[in-house]
Length: 44
Image (cartoon, rainbow, N blue to C red; front, side):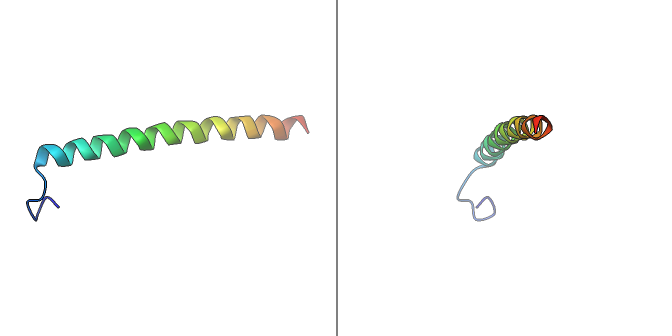
């Protein structure tokens, strides 16, 4: 989109930052779920 001049460089950077924040959020949630599952398996 940047090459076609549909968005500005600032918009591209904001989009990249937003995607990174979402990625970090979901990685954190997955890590928490994994720790909980490991704890459940250790109890068995």
